[in-house]
Length: 140
Image (cartoon, rainbow, N blue to C red; front, side, top):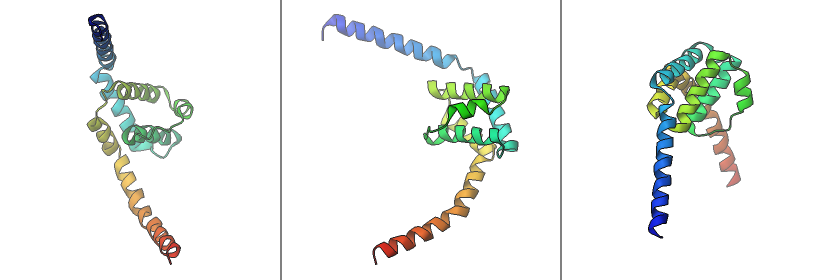
């Protein structure tokens, strides 16, 4: 690799690092905090509504990295303030300024972690019994 190639690669890397920093700075901490609060408050009181279901899918997709979510459904089922909050949180996640702690707090404070815990403990035993009986039968 020639010196010119090295310098060109270094210049490209520097430019990309600056652009990444600019994208990260575009999401203010105040905007992100407000957006997280908006989503948390809505999920705390309206998690079983259509919009609540959409928001729960969105938040869990950020938490567990399972990004199979219908964005058309998400964006057409929320009011203006919730849509704005989703846009800010999504942008923060994409550029890397949404922390795991912030997302965990949203899930805990909204009651979503507790709802998940209730569902998994109430449903976890039945499938194991079914699976174990299938397993035993298949090897008998």
